[in-house]
Amino acid sequence: MIDRLLLGALALALGLNAAQAQDIAAGKLLYAICAACHSTDGSPGIGPSLQGIHGRKAGTYPGFVYSRAMQTSVTVWDAKTLDAYLSDPHGMIPGNVMPFPGLVDARQRADLVAYLIALPPRRLASLREAR
Image (cartoon, rainbow, N blue to C red; front, side, top):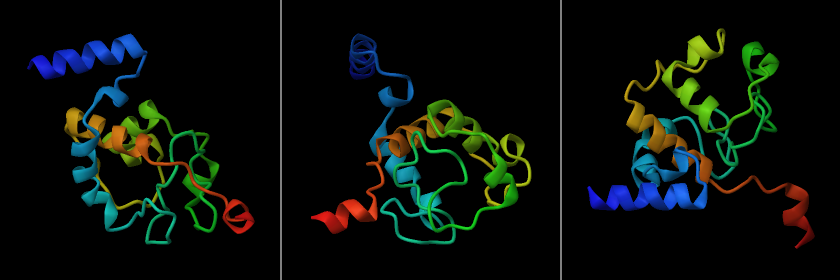
């Protein structure tokens, strides 16, 4: 209990948002649900890679063919939009084809969102080739 209070106080002192104060390790464990379709390292899969998802516009990961709903969405992924989407994917972006009904537990969503936001940004191929 005291650890959570200290973590909360530290988060407030540092100006961190609620998702950053959550349990990233628990979020990584929850990510196993997503890992069947999504990578975090840029490799292709059934779904788009979630590498560097924070700050990215929905439907724009290079090389992935998105549904029309995702392609035309104006959503930019941040803690709030990720939480809303993970809660009710088809309610937030009607017509998307992700076969996931949503994650009901708010704490689990917060932990998963914290993990996704903590993922490193996507490196551009040109940066890798320049080395």
